[in-house]
Length: 192
Image (cartoon, rainbow, N blue to C red):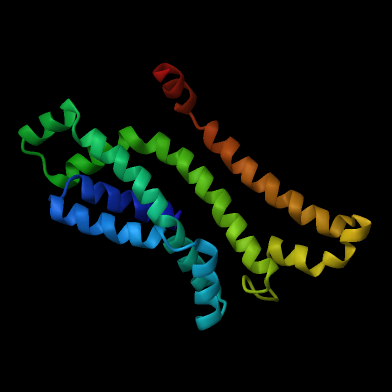
């Protein structure tokens, strides 16, 4: 949620801002997106130590640039539409245009992007926990449950299969929930 919200907010800001601000934020996001997520996570956790707030921050910073790029491309295209130009001619401010004119028309593609980012973040955090760098005991995480029961892999023990199935079920379930949101299917079907 943090990564998608921050990415969308910055994208809306760049869509209604002067070109120099758009270029500055876009270049900064390009710099962040060039850093591999797992390496960035491993370096920060190794330097600072593992904690839940740090893991949230790492996941947000790592996946915000991708969300920003998709949201920006949508917002910039929508900012050129006639209804946005009419709102500008009426004298509406940048915040009104971003929130009332552009955001409602880009929310459904961004929900689909949120579903994908959710999968990536769950896998990143589970991978860090599997390596022992994620959520620390006594707190539990699906990745740490797999790591703790890895010795049962040869016998196909349910103790290792169940957390892996839970990760898959969670990620698929969230994407199915997003696809089933009211209005999403009708609008997408109408565009085809």
